[in-house]
Image 1 (spheres, rainbow, N blue to C red):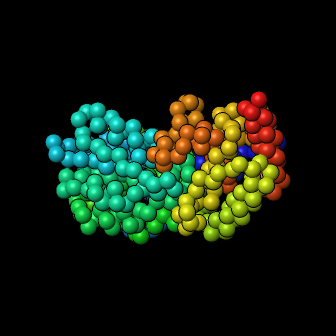
Image 2: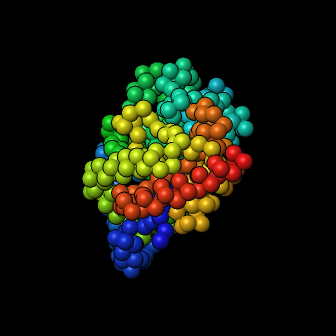
Image 3: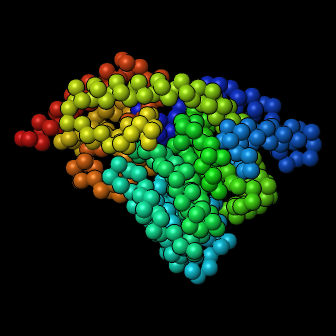
Length: 386
Ligand code: PMP
């Protein structure tokens, strides 16, 4: 039997989401831009989903466009702000631990001559607010910070950062990548007050290829995709009505059980950590200093005396699926940019495994995983000693 411990990469689709997508293919088959009744029905359904998602985000004063995922949403904001704004003295800021869909567009605009600075984080994976404070200037155009890091599960101090940025330069636009936060912790836009927020459906039991970019109504983004003018002229392309409905269903389901799931996830995490220490040993936890700064469903550990890519394959042969760093970089042998930014030593980085799960993980599955990991680890440590 498979044990899937890679929920931060993607999640299995929820059966009720699948039903809603199937139904939507049947009911809302028309092109939402068509001016006949079937077209209006599809368009109305999209507007309903938009409203419901904004409600879950506590987003009065905000609007939302549906995208093909968070990669597109992040690219829209960064590339768009560069195309729209770039004046010689403008500068851009982003934390060094962002997802590649944020880092790469910044690297691209940097290569075109933009002044981009990557902000550091501390050894527990939190962005350094003092570094941020020192970096903001009257020329700072846009700042990107993530809400929850996809490799460590560390919750970033967004509210503090936003207040600080607004005090230092009220004109700076603030972009937050909320992919690993939405549906997992409170993602109230009212509380955080960013200008832009990116989310993705497939991290919360929704379909792949669906995401959204939420923006403050007074700070419309510049489109990345041009064409027929769908999505308020901000994202052209025929709307994916079933995907949108599936996203809405997944988000509603997640929010209904958010509190209960969070308690269950903490219980699973604590149990897993106990067994890892008892059965495997030599485990270093790479996590925030307090539970308030950590999502429970992402557990990053380093297993002393091992190499994560070898352990990952051994576990995979047992049909147990974990990740070494983020899935996006795990096919490369390069060390994780996040762990490097945290200044972890080489050995800790080499042995780093990301275990990400949902609340349905059972005690038996935890047993099997920790036993297998213990066997492989002991085998590997013996080999290295020889
Ligand atoms: N940001 C973060 C923090 C992520 O974890 C991911 C997914 N790995 C993305 C952005 C990209 O999302 P999508 O797969 O929807 O493009």
